[in-house]
Structures are given as C-alpha cells and as structure tokens.
Length: 150
Image (tube, rainbow, N blue to C red):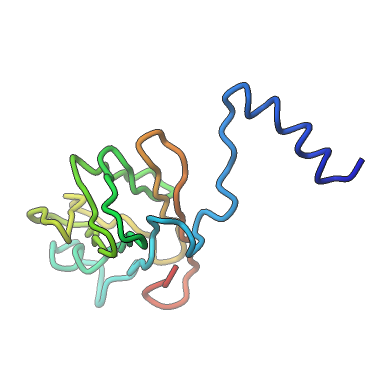
C-alpha cells in the first residue's frame, strides 16, 4: 500500500470522528482571507506612546471578489494577545489593518486597544483563526527588519 493511500486510510476515521485537519499552508497566498503584511517593529524607541503602538500593525487581505464576514475571528500572537473581530465584514479585494494601540474602529482600520506592544521585534507569529477557531492564516518572522510580507 502506498504512503498516500495509507495516510488516507488512517486519516479518514479521524476526520469522520470530527477531528480538524490542520491547514496545509496557513500562510499561503491562496487562502481567501489571509495575513498579508506585519509591521512588527514600529519606528523609533518603544516608548509605549499610542502613536508608536499604532505604528505596529497587521494587514489582513480578502483576496476574493466576495465580501467575507470576519465576525468572531481572532488575530493573536504566540503570547496570546488576542484581538476578536466584532460584527465585521471585509469587502471583496479589501484589506483591513489591525493596529496595536487605541483608536476608533473603521471599515479599514481596527484597534487592539492595547497600552503596550503586541508583536515581538525579535520574532513572533501572527495567527488568524476563524469563528470556529480553525487556523486560516499565519505569518512568522525573526529579528530581521521591521516588517514582513506574508
């Protein structure tokens, strides 16, 4: 029996029992809604000022022509700083920016409302999960540069 067939035979009962298969490429450019960019090291010293906090952000892109509801979706890091989208729809082809600091939410910019930084300058991972908690997209970086295109 080939490995591929064996894997299908072993996996089928798990999937039938309700186990969730891991996304094959969580950060892949083929995901309909995905993390597209992370600016993890805001310019200048990390003073904790709101303007500095808001210079740290994640961009989430809807790559389809169809509007997608992100209501109940979460954006989080390895340390479990969590932003939960309230009732929110991302239009087809649109991008929403999630900034770490405080501000007033709009259709194109959302705010964590934090008083300190979310994303680690020395390396971290951003995870985007849907309402059911399944991983939709992720983006990992090390200490090089202030930003990462995902």
